[in-house]
Image 1 (tube, rainbow, N blue to C red):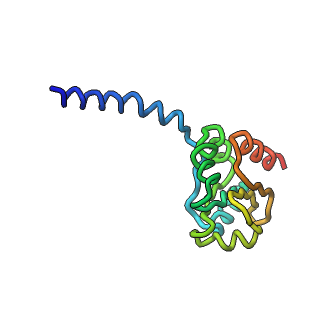
Image 2 (cartoon, one colour):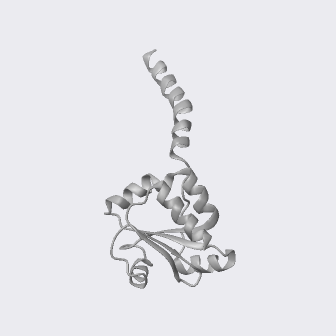
Image 3 (cartoon, helix red, strand yellow):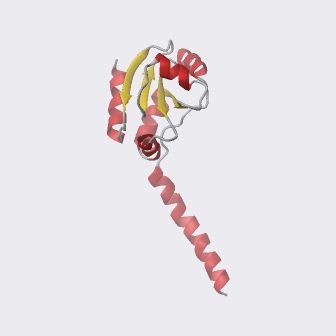
Length: 143
């Protein structure tokens, strides 16, 4: 009898608690799984700017931003609608060394906004809050 009650409790909790947890997390930024060259081609087709999160696996602020700012629903809506979003692990991704050299990346996280030709539009270094990311996007979109 105790096992049936436990199973019912777990089913009830999963049914009602997990959907609300998903809402708290928000949608966030959807990062494309494409190369930088593919992103440039897509940018040419769509007229969008490319947003690149340059990070490393060992970077604490990078991990924090991935779990917080990038998961914010408002940030996600703004970035997903207006940018081609890439997430590049600078030491493991094939494009990492080229991007690091091209944009003189020396610290992580570094966020890049580039056009379809690869020209730097904006570069920001360090942990960015939800508000910082919204301001960054709005500044770039106004230009």
